[in-house]
Length: 334
Image 1: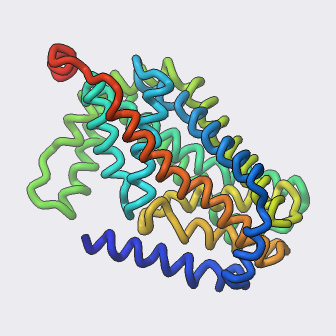
Image 2: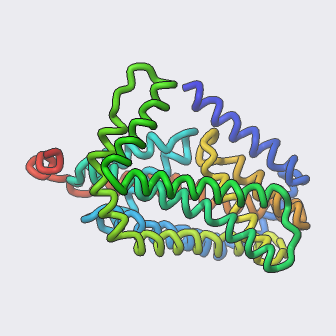
Image 3: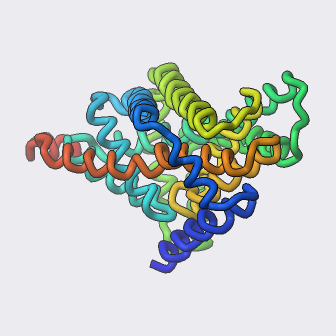
């Protein structure tokens, strides 16, 4: 409860004070700019969000055999709506994913495999964005701010570490056991009485994860490309709508910073932290402060807050869908 209260408080503080402070503007100026957005554009933006979320279903269906795109979309929006409401809500969102998938007859092992593989693909994609941004800015002869260089190097190092650990985990049984044993030791530092559950889980799932990556890597990669690509188009349209005039390379760099900051778990979905970092980058590159903050807020409305009512629709859809029979549930647990 304390974590939730602190996280929500930080999000409100970052949005109410931090965002206008670092963007060098005020909320009254931002609301004035947002009031000029026509309804047809808002509908277009919502359509792009739905399109991006549908692209992400290719990542999920590539990581879970037997999962269709409609069910993948429901799983995604239900989990995301929880994650976007609570600090560290990813764990609760994952629990919701387990519950929904199990009601359809999927085993815990298949859900765990999907969660691991899609999680790695997400982190690698977010780590790749600032690297691409730095290359684009350097090619465009644009001065690189130190923060952008540091973010790129951090992305390179973290991405390389994730690839090495992931390869170790799925390469051999011995590697999976060693990695799991090391992770169990880390968990014991903060949780007394923790057993060897990670080691056993990685060993049991190693073959399944390796097979999923072997057969689904291309589909998952293309789905991730479509998801981030459509969201970048949405970011461009939001910034254009609020009057930001910057080169595509700088806009992509600001977008990359924002996507990387969504991984910050102290607030729900990185709310407040993401917007502040993105707006500060735009202003540093010469964008009008009010326009920059309005563009970032507009983008956040559709990529963060819109997923909450979409998630509510997803929960309603799930409640109306047929459940697995007792025999199917018993077979999944066996």
